[in-house]
Image 1 (spheres, one colour):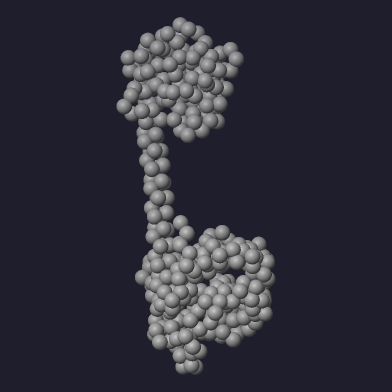
Image 2 (cartoon, one colour; image 1 turned 120 degrees about the horizontal axis):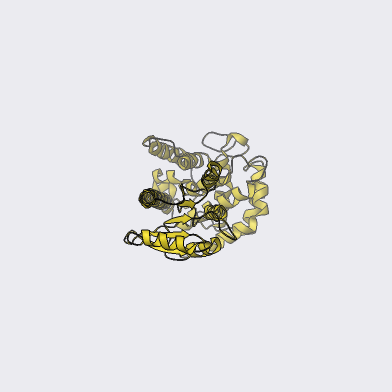
Length: 372
């Protein structure tokens, strides 16, 4: 963590020299303007700079027993907590190579002894002013970065709540619960995580996409809002005409999401995935699904994942037109749908993590309180 002094206090300067008389001279020269701390060795200087009050600037001799000034400066610059403290070398070494070494190890200035008090005071003031400006900009940048993160988190939370609310609105039309949404989105994420290293899917299922799939899954049945109650809530088998209307929920969902996309200045990935899922989750691997009759890889991966998740949850859930099936029955039905209803590789992944599906189903069972 970068050090910064309290703006309401005088700046703190650490003077480092193995000669006591030099330390006395520097203290006398600086004490009326600054808080002055003194160290008679490099080792002592490193200990002092690590303790309060925070050091704003260091005046550092080069030739000292033990750790010399160059090494002290190197260590300061390697430490995240002290690297931003300006170091001015005060030394009897006046050779150009020595001066270059001083700058190479990280000093901001190099003053040869004997020192000129006006020059030293002017340079100390200049470097403290520069440091104060850098500290201000750094702190401002940190604040802005934190504010951006906070607002992005806030927008993401609002987005998630809005998506869940919209999905729940669709689900409650046919007497389902918000837990259906939680279950299906967790099924989808579990499947995607299982498949992320599969050769067919590894390029598509990166961590960011998996999270977007989780976020977009609640909108898979948003089109049900447009289906009349006498069809959506019918307890018996639908007629061919009624089923034709029911099937339009996929197109209605796609159109609703597409309309939202058109109001945005730039594409939004989770809306694209939501549109794919809403439109394609009733397609089947063998081409016998709807609304387009797509088959195999022509069906978007997002929709293929949702197909397994949605069918599993529909099977284990009680509906107005059927009782709930057991987990084992649902697993067997999905197994039988391999390469007909469902992508065979996704079915294989499902079979390997079927126990995880059962756990999710129990965690978000209908009638249970919403998890915190």
